[in-house]
Image (cartoon, rainbow, N blue to C red; front, side):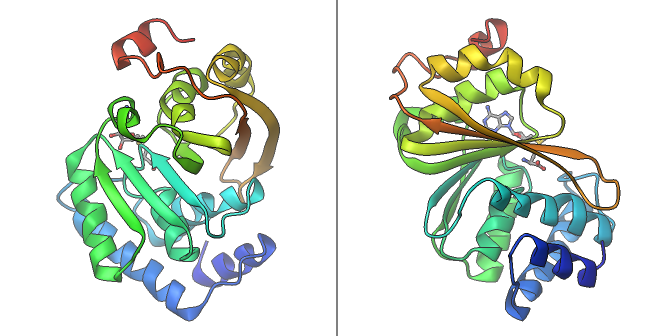
Length: 233
Ligand code: SAM
């Protein structure tokens, strides 16, 4: 997906991108490639592919939820997907990026500083530990490519505010979702919508799962990661 194709695909998502935002994404891309030459962040490095599979893909979250002026938490953000891309394109979002690998947080902080972004923080933590401080705190919690739906629900739903949303970004999620019904309910969520679509240029199927938080999560959750893994809800 070249830049013109990116701009036009965003129009189909009702996103009108400014020249400044395009410049910021270009700077992000350049820092990503530079950092990736010595520290592993992503195996996708070719520019058109990064614009499609990281930048555009991250922005498809708008298919599920209105993003303006909300607090958003991205668990296991890696090199900033989707959270940092969303912050660059929707500057009014208040974003928290969490990852358990410090080298990724160091990279994210350098992009945040270079672009002069405000109302965004990059936190080095494991989700299940960060939840001790920040439970029931965010309007939207999202996550891409971190764990299966059942485990991910336990890592993410505790952070969602009353009437907020957990919206994981998945590939083909039908089977995973069936296996996560009990976890979603136990953690206080209700499945509101499942949005399935194809990325352009045959880049694959994507699924956005929209879960609303209706009941506070019991303080029993999240459990230690070893337990979450051994006995998924
Ligand atoms: N979300 C990014 C993306 O889609 O490109 C990164 C995906 S990468 C496959 C998974 C990331 O989740 C890694 O950066 C890893 O360090 C992080 N991670 C895994 N388990 C985690 C946990 N329990 N808490 C916080 N981060 C975690």
